[in-house]
Image 1 (cartoon, rainbow, N blue to C red):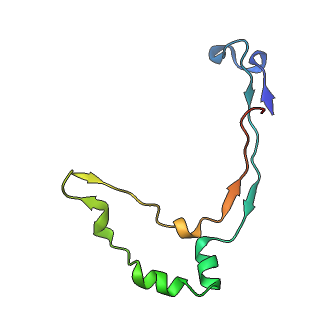
Image 2 (cartoon, rainbow, N blue to C red):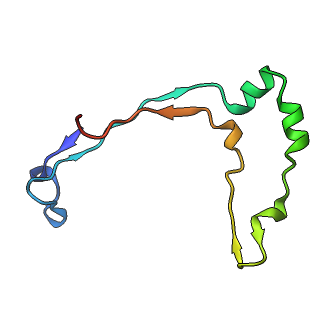
Length: 86
């Protein structure tokens, strides 16, 4: 769905040449890293050798905190997008 500048409210007018497009990106499901490793028999060994240490995210030398995605092994959806034309 694309909105042309004439269809937007007068208090929020984009530049005249701008067109605002809103589209839904369909998501596709695929096997997560956890599922793939489990099928190949590698998950148990990986979890034994890569233990999660909650204190690791705190770097005491530079007073900063590093946040990691907690469920990165379970991310199982993606959407294809394209920007412009070739």
